[in-house]
Image 1 (spheres, helix red, strand yellow):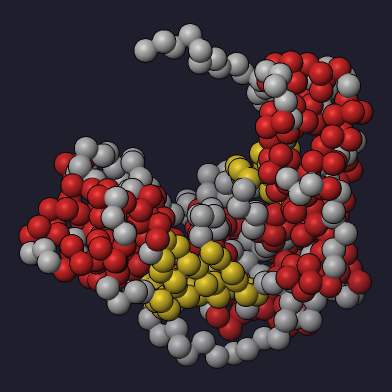
Image 2 (tube, rainbow, N blue to C red; image 1 turned 30 degrees about the vertical axis):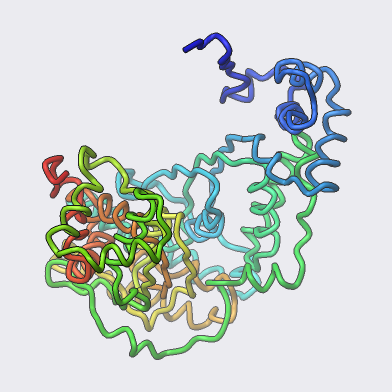
Length: 457
């Protein structure tokens, strides 16, 4: 085989902004790549031309991305953005966008040094003094618990959603435009400020790729999800309590599990491997003896390690769950972005998850008092999107989560693992137990990395 015709060049990579020469812009990359499909020139020539004529490259971007509708071109422009002083609540709004990468300062591992701050909505409601007092009380209790040996990942359950953090974000220009639009549509002032700052910080750098950020009524309504709306008291349909070491951590209910989920998943895999239509694969399975089906499914993962994903064919089967879980557990769940996820407001009547290490300590009564104060303030602010700022890491929200079978195995690998955070691990284990019952053959591959070995394959 003649490999001389194959050429690889590194056309760009991440470097600190301070080291980037003046006048350089990711738009030259997008403009060059946009012309690949219609120019006989090689990519290096196209990039050199775009760098030499930035204004022309920008006009080309605007014509191709917006006038012609080839928006995927904007995905070639990627930015690394440092965000500091952002609340946990605003972080959740930011990180709803799937096609970006986020790395947060973890409240599980870092002891936080927190200065109280006041959201504009709280100031306007005249609750400034009470809000600051609550933050100070919660932070003081948090510090005392950590100093007394309560694990940081448990002590953080007392911290309000207003507590600031920081995140490193890598995002392409197409997603960034959607992100700015959503932030500007969100009824939370902090989110709007973040949207404006992102626009200001990137507008001069990639002006040809950030254009449609004026929210409509539709965007405003959609961006209010999880922040505003009527408060309903009943969640009776969620009757299965999820427990961890005897302590309730929330509720879980399967909403949609296909009745023949294992056979459907196996048929999707068989259709893929044997190049037959799905209905033919189903007929083949129906004609097989059980042992042969077990062997087929076992072969699916043969040779793979516990770090490998299952075949992509399993993405054709979806499962939907409804959960009521704490803010701390939600922080883990939202990282699984290759899923459909919608959520409601944090609400006091959904309960408060108390870590076992605190429930069994002398800090429990003080935690209870602080929670009651937070919920009283929430009641006074309940008509405002800022009401969630006063609730804490242990407060809960209702979530609907839809993921394919392949993603469920990935979720199980990470969240049933012994190193997983205990709250989300309880949910992952409850899901896994139900699926192991409904999918006994596939279920052999479910479980945390610490519980499985490569011999499973």
